[in-house]
Length: 178
View 1 (cartoon, rainbow, N blue to C red):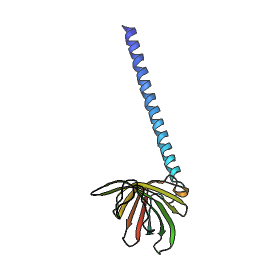
View 2: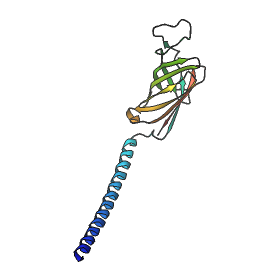
View 3: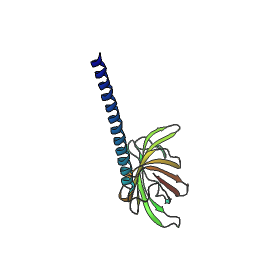
View 4: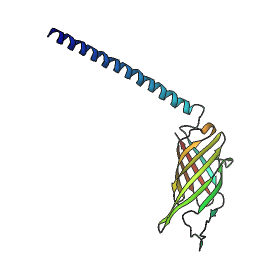
């Protein structure tokens, strides 16, 4: 009986020791992950003053240019899936000076009686690098796209793009980086 109690006490001591070591190891690993996550987070934003900011530009749109793939339109505006628009627009600052460009395509992916679905992909060239974006939209003058990456000071960029067409060949572009 005494040996059973002694074995039971040793087992309990061993289990408590394992539990304490496990808790200590968990705390150390957790602290290590927090340090790693903080370092990784700082590393991804280091050298990029644009993160966490909203960049705003005026846009001077290029002429409307739709590529009509066969079978060709029977009448003006008779678009179908596979047709696409290409664009190359000028970006301006508040004073109207050229500060960059945006270029890309809008591939029509679906057309029905209520409208069209368009897949947009674009690159925005600014001083210091480029920002890429893409997403689904419609012919509506307001487009909301995702920032998918970047180069230079925008490497690893994430966020959203909001484009508004004014209807007179001009518009606004807002890039929210996070």
